Image (cartoon, rainbow, N blue to C red; front, top):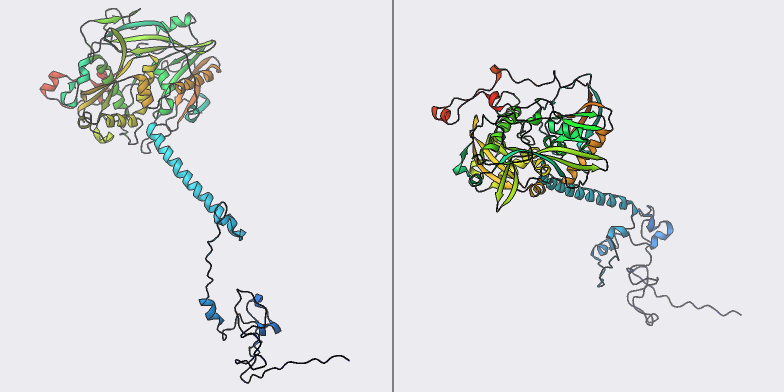
Length: 566
């Protein structure tokens, strides 16, 4: 017989469901307030079941369940007061939050959809930082190289230095960007011949100041020669003796070597005769003049007859340089002579103080370059003779440069030179290249200004500064290896051409050089640039008697036209 099942005494709760609040004698042995469902330490305690809840509406949250089990769910029961408990409940944990072992926190985020967005933000931030760094480097680079890849003047419209004829055949165009990384080292040159005579430099001009300015004189009786390569009798003789395969002058070489700094258009004639190469300039070429304000961002007047136009300033600068190079000499008849006299001066003709050094460089095993280089003066200190090149920077109007030389030269000469490096980077680089080609010991830079901004005939010497060519080249960021790399590449390109005549033309609006094949008789008769008619020439301003007596006035073209022997 199966034993009977005894049901324990169930206390009656007259107040509602569940055990009574006060335990009876039968339940005295049970623990007080023990829940009747398993729970964990983090669970909240409450009622076991609520049969009074409305179960007609399912729970909004599917995780909360529904149906018959919903009577045991008190998580959404507002009447039970859990909402208030949730708002006030705080988990107290004294342990520190765990740190990730490496990387930012978002890498360990389980929501993978956010990772590409955060990665894109990081990439964009890196791009912005790289762009700022690139802009900073470009700004510093442009300060050191004022003209390389700098923006051109938008208001100015540049014209080609030579009229491109329809029968010319363009063979190639070379952008300046290909010149920047070229490099070539040449051995020390050898002097083949020295011609001419030099006068000594007058060192009293080193003490010239704006308060002790010196009036610029005019030298009408001295002849200046700007002879091209093929018209030079010495170069012809050296070519007949097969001394080299490439021939040029220092002016042409410096123009090619400093081509990336140029803004104005220029042209150079190339003649391939047999296995020899001759670089020439046209009669009346822009290479005989000196550019002014070429690399400045402020445009000059476009009218050719304006005294501040690019052409008028170029003629004025050439006139100033010629006179300056002769005034700063000791004109006492004491000269230093060389192997041969001036090859371009006739007998009895007074030539300017200049010495021509015919030098040869080795470009390759079977390729040599001969160039005619010039020095203008000589100086002797402690029985040591040094060659000098003499050049002058000219101030025409301080409102264009923004720096008044008369006020800044004494106290801030470096600021004046920095402004000139910005406005005339190409001209200063060409002067430095010519001094390096001639192996001159020193460069003398004169600062010449107009007596009055509207008087382009009378000038004064405000100061003279001396530099070593190699030190000055480093200061203006002129790399000798890059200079010869540019020249070597142009020579190699021209040596591939057939025999004939060609012309290299700097594009007036783009930083590039174009090579044209031209007829054999080009530039001989019909391509010479004619001077302005006399009625269109700029007339000098009225001068008082004292000014006429001191300087005198002459025709602009007669005074400023550069003589050339053809």
